[in-house]
Image (tube, rainbow, N blue to C red; front, side):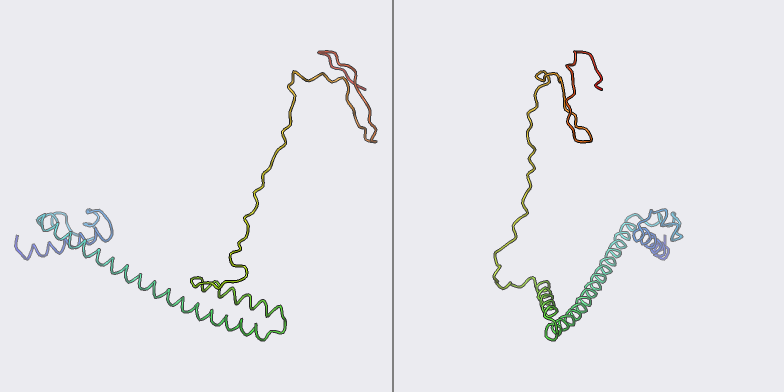
Length: 192
């Protein structure tokens, strides 16, 4: 095989490997995508094909890493822009709160603005050491645990129970009436 034909075939092998590795497809699909005959591909010696495959794989990995680093830089730049925008908005809100705190007619509005200002400072400067106050060291007690205790009722054994001879019935008018005759064993009676 002449050097010129081998070089042309190597370019075709490179195109097949590029399609295979970049799109993660089978070798036969790569032949279809690149319109390269399998006989042309396999005419190139195996050592040359393996070397080309390693070069193409390394090139694809390098391109992916460059793309990922470019995306990471773009993401970091976007985060910096957002942080700058939020910082500017927070400064503007802080100035508005200061103006309300200083110029409001109502004591409630001034106190509310001061509380909001303090909350803002506390949320945005968490990493800094906090000043000690009157309530330093005091923490809220945990919620009490509720123990539900059920009374233990001693029930007599069925063998210890005596048969019922009479019982009391309360009428709708509120009158109590004793009903009952001794029940004979095995016999049911109607009380009228």
